[in-house]
Length: 231
Picture (cartoon, rainbow, N blue to C red):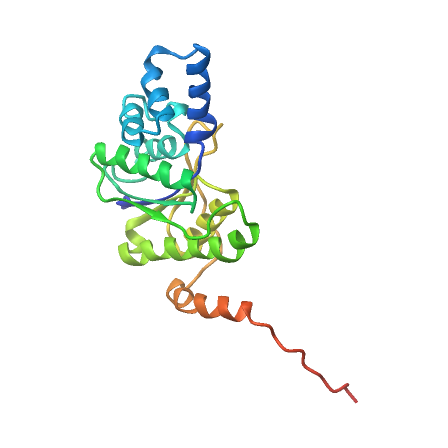
């Protein structure tokens, strides 16, 4: 089996909440471990490059590092991707999403992964549920398909561990439909799991071309039609 060289990762907020927020509270209460003080202080100061450097001092399997780092470490350990795989972090259209993605990018560039890129998904946010559903999830699908189309399905894998539950579902569905392996790690799992193949398929080239038109049609009001009764 050829190991994928590109890993597409959905990004959540577990690194900040509860992990680093918990450390900040422990720092304030004077209950923090000495080796975690610099990390808590960097987070408190919103110094994201320093947060990345301090996270790099910890074992990537330590829960403090968050779902993304934990799951990627497990994938590399299991040989599901090449050790220095390229990473594309798809993050929400929020301040936390942008900040966490910046930390992850700095962290993995320091680990000599290449390429490492962050991709913001417009309208993927939690303040407006309708916009999340009608635009955010569609944009997420487009962004994932865009990376796969650019890099090829054979080179890619999807790590659907981080992010909103619906975001994870989209990652799983697209990967299964296109034939890209999909992985997931629950916080209580000791290791990451691969989703078994399912009987779904998608011509994503056609979907990418048609998705804009389908969205436009959905927004248009369809006129009522009068039908003659059957005789």
